[in-house]
Image 1 (cartoon, protein in one colour):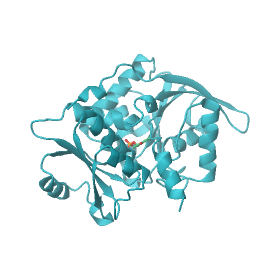
Image 2 (cartoon, protein in one colour):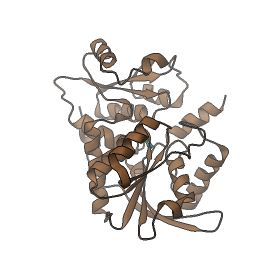
Image 3 (cartoon, protein in one colour):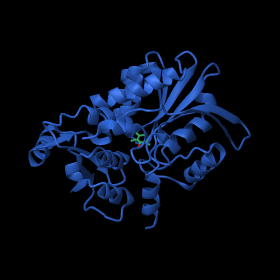
Length: 301
Ligand SMILES: *Cc1c(COP(=O)(O)O)cnc(C)c1O
């Protein structure tokens, strides 16, 4: 296996930028450009996979298996990392059948990932130890990573992201960090590694138990916004699509509607409410741009 693909040669840029609202107000902020890490192994998925790949016991395992929806950024990233590192991958996909025209799944297949369809009922059991055990018996040489890649080794990758931010002079007394929430692994990894830093988390999924648990664990260090979902997980609207395009035109930073678009829309339109005068905003660009192809594909029908 070649894990050199995860060696950091250059830390990702922290870009100073500005977005002008329709009202004329200019919003100044910085963006941590994890979208630039790798064209295929996107942003936070790269951070989360890094130590899972580097610490894989290759005497015991000859592949990595994980779970995801049919348009999952994690599945796309895992397949690309497997291809580049020369290690086998399996994706258990929540779908009734593998659609070879789906851009995410066809990319995964090009990356030689083995795709296995799981019904909704089966997929619901993805976190249950007995279910995972059954899959492990059927695929004995595979190391299983949870959906979204969020496990204890993912946390190490996010601690590395925090180290980069500190090197780039981001500090708890001057800044506040914002990031999108899916499974919550990215924001909790950063919260755990960045003592005293306050965070804003913008939910891309209406997972009330998860958001309640995060709030309970991190208290006042974490502000969660869960009411700017534009129809729910994986959904978008014309307003959100237009915002993403306008944001990209103004800042030259591409974003997508599923995670980073919801994040940036919330931050720009609720800036005064969310960011105190004495703090400056750092938004984490978690990548995910492959998801745009999936959205376009779904809209053909
Ligand atoms: C997966 C993903 C997220 C959510 O990350 P979690 O760690 O699951 O909360 C955010 N942004 C992008 C672009 C993603 O692909």
